[in-house]
Amino acid sequence: MTVKKVGVIGGGSFGTAIANIIAGNGHHTQLWMRDPEQVESLNQTRVNSLYLPGQELHPSIVAAHELAAVVQDVDMIFVAVPSSSFRSVVRQMRPLLHAGVILITATKGIEAVTFKLMSQILAEEVPDARIGVLSGPNLAKEIVNHSPTGTVVASNDAEVRTLVQETLRSDSFRVYANDDMLGVELGGSLKNIYAIIAGMADAMGMGHNTIAMLITRSLTEMARFGVRLGGDAMTFLGLSGVGDLIVTCTSPLSRNFRVGKALGEGKDIDTIMRELGQVAEGVNTVKQVKEKADELGVQMPLCSSLYEIIYNKAPIGHIISSVMLAETELDVEFVVGKAKSLPV
Image (cartoon, rainbow, N blue to C red; front, side, top):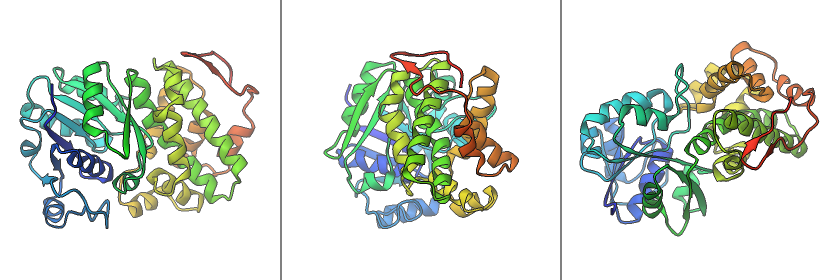
């Protein structure tokens, strides 16, 4: 199979960055955007003025407001819309798709109520599709600036992994493969929680020692939870785990980091989200993960503390206490392939 025509669903920063790579690689590339005015603006100026202002895009990208224009008769589709609207958008796409189309989720989130990952939603809504997951330490602004970047494509289908690698690979964008879809997708979703925590710590003036401790213990929580759901612990040591965790916990380009920083400065969450003007998946993800962890009996003190701060107005110092007062004295809690069952 050869990929010639590609559709990208979602004209936010990451969807636009992915479309820019694909167009630069010579593929016929169409980008679906909700707002007709944004469509017209991008097609005329070659700039996504709302999400990537000042970044000139490849001239062959064609933006469209009609789903049919983007998804009909294409070989591969990347879906990069917020998790809250993911299922409804996929349902709109479904009657327009041909059997065996390749669908790749680039959304890092978890569906409310159902606790479904985006790949699971794709499998439910389009059961005859070939499905994959794209995740990694991928800040959109750096991607469009051609900063050397690595990402991960995960799929149970080896050909899908290869085709995505061929479609996205460029001089500045390296695509690695993994067959642990669950682990890769969970890594991309969970790290948003801890990016908020890191932003709070930064606003509180915490030193490098504290940030290093928070990132490391965050990784432990991610792996513990991921393994309990069936992922491979080693996946969390790769780009979609620790790699994504590091970049979102240390960069002000991360929306979730900025949310945490604003929380640490004393702003309330409603004001923060209104001023941000974009989706920060970690705010919703922390609620889903905290409830699921309680249900499964998985101890996640950092996640639980952030939940208390956002939803129950607990003081922000609660985060540091959750680490310093944890009972476990073990550093590494998992061995190759599976986590040990240890107290926290």
